[in-house]
Image (cartoon, rainbow, N blue to C red; front, side, top):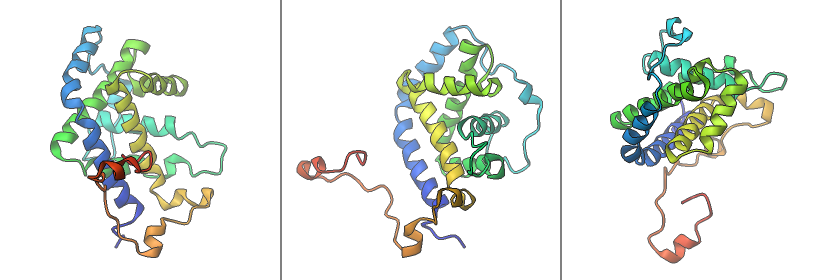
Length: 213
C-alpha cells in the first residue's frame, strides 16, 4: 500500500488546493471569457482529426477532448528526446492527470472542463485550428502567449502545465536520471500537514517566506 505521504498523494492534494484557489476567479471571469472568445467569431468545439481516434478504456474520468489535450500537452511540454530523462510515452502522464482531476470537487471539476475546452478551442482564433492540432513549435508559442495574457488565460496555461509536470514527475521511473531517490517525507516518516493557513498575527505573516502565502 502506498504511503499517504507518497509523491502521487501529495501531488493530488497540492493540485486540488491550487485548483480551488485559482478557480475562485473563474466564477467571476469564466462567463465573460467564453463570451469574448465567442464574439471573436470562431466555432466553439471545432472538429479535429483526433476526434475520430479512440481513447484508452481506462480514460473514464476524462472526455475524449480532454484526453487528447493532455496527451498533446505531454508531447509539447516534456520534450525529453536526446536526453537521459525518461520518455514521456513511457510514463502514465495522462492517466495520472485523470487521477489528479478526480480529486477535485464536482463544481471545480466542471469549471476545469470548461477551461480546458476554452484553451483547446481558442487556438482557432490565432492558428485556425485547435491546440491539439498545432505543431510542437506552435503549441509552445501558444502556451507562452497565454502566459502573458489575461488572468484567466494565465491561470489556464499554468494549471495545464502544472498538471502535466506533476503527472510526469510523480512517477518513480522519472527520478533516477536526475539522481532523485524519493521524498524524504517517506524515508523519514514525516507526516504531511496539508496547506497550512497563514499566521493570524500580521507581524508573523510578514515574516512568512516568499511563495508560501
